[in-house]
Amino acid sequence: MNHNDSFREFMAAHQQSLMRTAYLLAGDAHLAEDLLQSVLVKMLGRWAKLAHVASPQAYARKALVNQYISWRRRRVRTAELPSAEPPERPYSSEASTIARLTMQKALAQLPPRQRAVIVLRYYEDLTEHETAKLLNCSIGTVKSQAHHALARLRALAPEFAEMEDVKGAHR
Image (cartoon, rainbow, N blue to C red; front, side):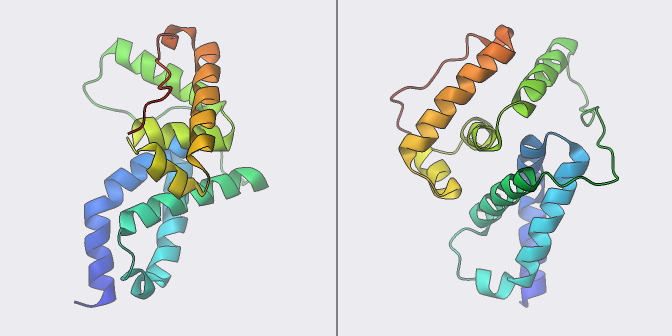
């Protein structure tokens, strides 16, 4: 199997989950597509070398986080105007839609590192150790960023005040 075929297989297996991660980070479907595309283009160019990586999906997820943080730092402005509406999801109740939109709006107000920690820990269900490794920081930093982010989310969206802070939870 050549490298292009193995990359296609990787994409078929992981594109949906990577797009979800990109969307949760970017908060906008169009920006998420751009974010994922830029990461995948870089990965395709390095795919022969990535054959030795234990988990290409973890590599891609880390690249998404790094690219997202880099974009936020540079605050690149384009002529494109992102849509204020999230992508439609079939069969969702009005209450769950409102809760999802409220949480999305609150997430968008978090600093990039805190948002990345929340997405990786609670949406991607990664452990503190896995999150720390992806973000290239200590487990203590992940814990403190999650703590501060959850406190900020509670302040921004009081309806989620019952969110439990996972102090001392070592996954």
